[in-house]
Each structure stands twice: as C-alpha cells, then as structure tokens.
View 1 (cartoon, rainbow, N blue to C red):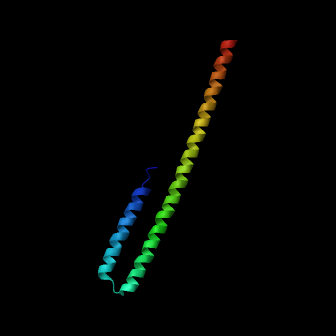
View 2: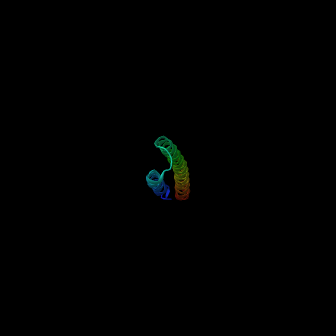
View 3: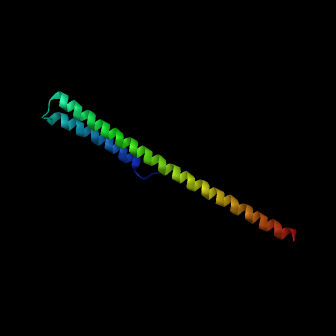
Length: 91
C-alpha cells in the first residue's frame, strides 16, 4: 500500500503547521479571531487525516480480500491437480 497516502498526510500536517506559523506572523486579526481560525484549520486537517485513514483501511481490506480469493483459487487448483494425478495413477 505504498501509494503515497502516508507521505501526503505527513506533508499536509507539516504544511498546515507552516501555514499556521506564517498566518500568526502576518495576521491582521485579533488574538481571539486568530485562535478561532487556527482551531478551524486544525479541525479541517484532522478531518482530512481521518478521511485518508478510512480510505487507506478500505484499500487494505480490498487487497486482503483479493489475496484471500487468490489463495482459495490456488488451493482449489492444487486439489484438482492432485485428484487428476491420483485418478491417472489408479487406472
């Protein structure tokens, strides 16, 4: 599952932190307004991280399901091959 989601999440959080720092330096708003803005942005970031986590879990489950199906097919094919060889040896 190396599709960059983990790196994107980390980059997002780092970017969010840098953005907050720059905003504090240049904020034309009062302290209370700035704190509210920071709180809103942090909440938005947390929602994005949770969404990414849920998406990653769904992709992982899909991959596990595909793996289980492949193993089932492999075992079924192996059983059929053994039955074919056994039948040929018994005749």
